[in-house]
Length: 177
Image (cartoon, rainbow, N blue to C red; front, top):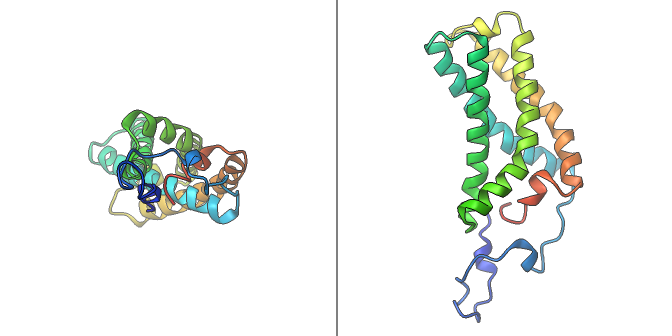
C-alpha cells in the first residue's frame, strides 16, 4: 500500500502531514494504463472480497440448511460487503473521509463485483450437485474454486475495458497501488 500523504511538501504548513490531497493535485499521477496486469490485479482484488463473501455466505446458508435462492442472495450480499470493505480499507489508509471513500469504492467495484457474482453463481448452479454439497465435500470446494476461476477469467477483460475508459479501478488507482 502506498501512502500518498508522504508526497506532501515538507515545507508546507503541516510539515508534509496536512490534509490528504486528491490524486489530481499530485502532479505525477497520470491516467491508469489499461494493461492486462492492471486488469488482473483489479480483478484479483474484487475476487478476494467476493471469495470471502461467497464462502462465508455459503457456510452460513449451509449451516442453516437454506435453499439455493437464499444461499445465493446471502453469498452475493456478503460478496459486495467484503468487496467494498477491501477497497474502503485502502482508501481510508490513504486518508480519505468516509463519504468520498464510499463514492470511490462504489464507482470502482460495483460493475466488477456484479459481473463476478453473476458468473460465479451461474457456474455453481450448473455444476451438478454443487449447491446441495456439504461443506465437508470435495464437490463443494472444487465447484467453488472452478466458479471463482471462471469468474476471474470472464471479469478480467471487462475490467481491462473499464479501466481503459478511466472507470472502475482506474478511479482509485492513484490512492493505492
